[in-house]
Image (cartoon, rainbow, N blue to C red; front, side, top):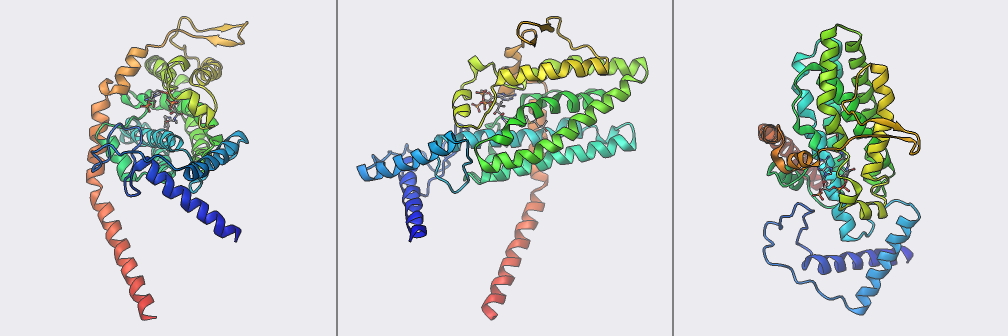
Length: 371
Ligand code: 3HC
């Protein structure tokens, strides 16, 4: 009886939400890609809920709020406000895109790694990033947006991915610096995501963070080996650090005062620590590591502030950051073109997998019918 009532409540809420937000249950929403759904050109007229419907919605909202306030987890079949769903799809899909675009700058060094050991490590790392993309696309799919929709948004330039992957990897030292600093910044941002209020994202992040930790250490170790090498190798490391440092600080996103999504994201327990606080934690953690390596971080204003108990650091070039985010960084066009080509070249694999699945399903259906 209780089960039946629960089911009816869920069904009722689902129908209500579809009717209320989409106009018709068949319409698909898109996330913040700012594009209308293919066919839905006319603006849907939102139905005004009746008093009884409003009561059901209010009850669902109250239950959602109680879970968030108690620091609990929201799961895919739970009711959730549409804005929460959209925020998650926006963030998780951007994150997934970052992982797979992030394979490109390092992938370009696999054939030129200086030893078999370094090549094996790099192949494993780049493959891990592809895996992270897959966990994250799967997590986003539980929210009702298909992988095809997300990839289409990436390939047509409507979706964002991390600014950091639009810079070139000029020398082997860049590969080490990506591990040490880029993956180091990524972990700083991603550890708190293991406590995200959305269950599938939080669980995906636990595994991602374990692997990112290996990525960061292998980068540091590769740089340490170079810093114990020739003056030319040491200079190569310093040059790479000079080129990547500021881009890594910008990776954490705009300052809190300029971050439109932060307040709501934190209220919902999606984000746990603000962009500026994470950036500060990263600077404080990295300074002593740079000392061990013997490299200089390229910031004359970087110094310990006794009063704050943190390092002060110089001004980030936000104009350069936004130009890159908006498609005008040094490698944006190249990265997107490479992604699109890889997707097109892989079409035969997807077609073969689909044909195999269809044949298998048909065989199973025939066997069941015969039995
Ligand atoms: N690059 C590109 N866009 C960025 C950005 C960056 N470094 N930082 C922020 N932005 C975008 C936001 O996506 C947002 O755009 P939108 O509203 O159109 O979606 C806009 O700038 C304003 O920023 P906000 O601070 O308001 O946005 P968020 O509250 O979403 O915070 C974030 C931004 C901190 C990146 C957050 O979305 C987040 O934590 N995402 C998950 C982690 C992630 O995506 N990391 C990317 C790197 S992954 C990686 O590096 C792979 C690893 O293998 C190395």
